[in-house]
Image 1 (cartoon, rainbow, N blue to C red):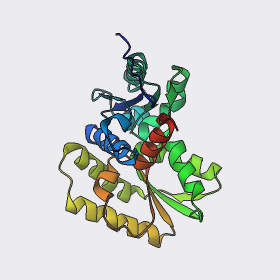
Image 2: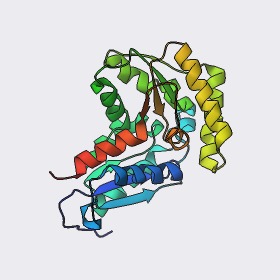
Image 3: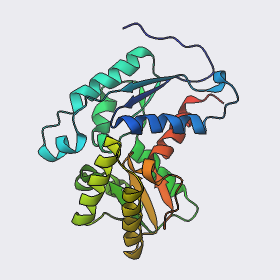
Image 4: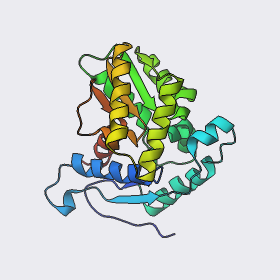
Length: 239
């Protein structure tokens, strides 16, 4: 494939989306929202690959067969060959494999986990305990827990029943059927987390901000989609 050469002030952003499709579009909307632009030419040149055929990341992790990895190597290579200079993957669970992907490319590959935890640590009054809402894959691998603990923060995950509820809500968002009922369930779970000692809520699945964003939550919220989008803008814009 011929590389796309784009002249301009900004680096070319590659988005490996499709995990799920709405989350990839939501991420791009956030990139647009955080880009200081008053005209078309001020925006970041972007290549979006909605790679919907990547096998389920949580299933790959839980079953130990990791068949989601080869298509993601292909996706990263596609974006790099197309001219992407910075690549973002708006899927938290996919970042279980981030170091494998980084080892396979020379293109800058952002980490949603690193950017989210860095933002939490940069908060003037960092929360003493963070509740992590995400997929079962996030909970089983303790992907965020390890990063939070390395930063000196405590964390809690939902119990088994609550996690099952979150998993069903994520599936509802992916199917386009989630609405007020699912949002209220999430808000109730957030309140339970607050009563359990959480001082902040980390939305560690890119489907969850689609439901939560713009609605009052009983805890300060760290939206991993938005934080990755801010990082993408920061890395791509030449100032």
